[in-house]
Length: 82
Image 1 (tube, one colour):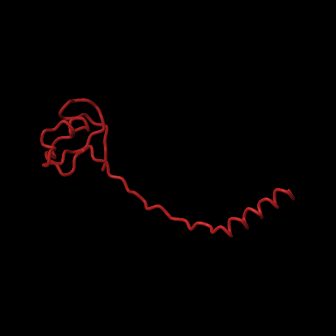
Image 2: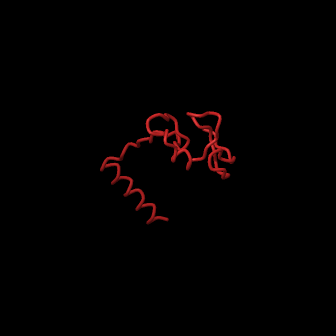
Image 3: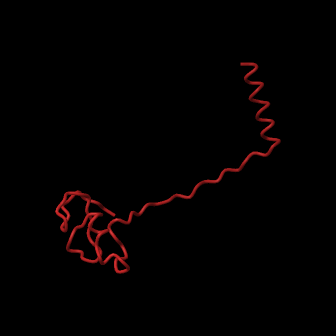
């Protein structure tokens, strides 16, 4: 979705606008798109809908209790010697 700072064809204010999916000849801003009476069910891709790519989270393997104790002992010995 590309957004341009143009003049809205409905209200006349300079805001980020995009092409209306129902009426492709007009450029509308978010406010006018939200106030449109045709958006209830007829409009499948409204201007105010934001598309983002969500990346899956990488899951990390947790340490076992034995590994945690070993790591804690190593760190305390390093603190005592350093």
